[in-house]
Length: 504
Image 1 (cartoon, rainbow, N blue to C red):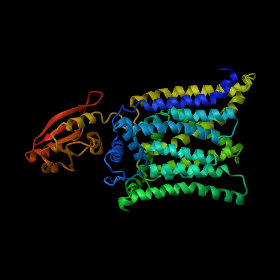
Image 2 (image 1 turned 180 degrees about the vertical axis):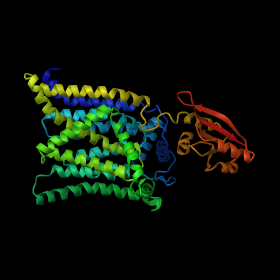
Image 3 (image 1 turned 30 degrees about the vertical axis):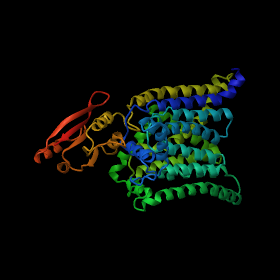
Image 4 (image 1 turned 90 degrees about the vertical axis):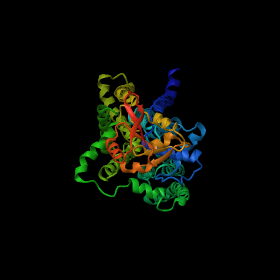
């Protein structure tokens, strides 16, 4: 390509290649691991919708809204029930989130087109190569889809498309009710976009736009209420979601440091490299400080302050309120932290380029381009190792990392037993239920304690290889029951993973 045409196409080709690379990285481990227990639960719900004639999930105690389950059910209907089909919607959502993030970064930055493209490209690069995001994409958790809808809502409102922003946020809410925590982000970006006008005129303009935003959100809430109504107030997904996840207290003194370390550990996984994380944090802080000191009332400065303020408030709430320290709770924060770091780096490049001008006076605008290339190469160099470790399963983030190897073989063995055979379950729950399949001929029975085995014998008892089985053997011996190991599954490294005992 000639230089003119190449310069015009580069802002399109480069992000397109990054998005394709990000999609390939996220698709690679789609079938490498078995389901996490919660993934198995969500996949079981989707199978009930797609194949068992229960579109309202009335036979299940659901604590989340249904959009994510319906997308997985549609995948099952098209491709059959499998791990690949269950994870495909999230892989596609994660790849689309990369495109949405790039578009949002371009829309928020009204600087010169070359600097705007560089900042947007850097934000895209950080998320595309993030071990954390790569590992969450091939899962059945709701967070990748919530992240997509939230970024799209912010992109729409930044372009003064408040109605479409409401549609996107309503879809986020229909995927997981915790999307409510991120409602301040699109609203703040929308308000900032109209700042600088008279208060009376600003109030009128915002009132109309907020109405356009609220209408589709309220429509989504109404549809969710209709879907939820047959369950009744006590079994509502709102009630169950609150009971299962909402903490009822602030943290205690002894929890301050452990919880801080836990959340910091998940944030470290965003890049996987302490050096890169510190460099990005320094760039974000330096860029924000420079803008706040030199241009405190400029739109870009207020946007950065809003993003930083929200991130600190959200992380502070997760830390100080006794929420579970689940890695997925910070997923939707990742693209906005990448935006802050990229915008900070873009601000830091300008004085660095000016300093480089003393030693490189004839380079002109190429000084900044060279600095961007150097920064990109260093980021990729820092990201390669953690990314390779993530693809090998050595990063404890996202779904299962080999802990449940052998569950499918164990379920296949149990399905060879005579129809009606009783299988007693104490450890495996939804995991075993999913891999047995919706048409299994064995009968599952929940056994809460070892002394309950006597009421179910003869039966088969599957257990993780490392389960504390000695107490069960002792109780069985006391009531003249024998427990004989009849099947052993192994993981990918050859170690025992699951055992099946015959109790008679």
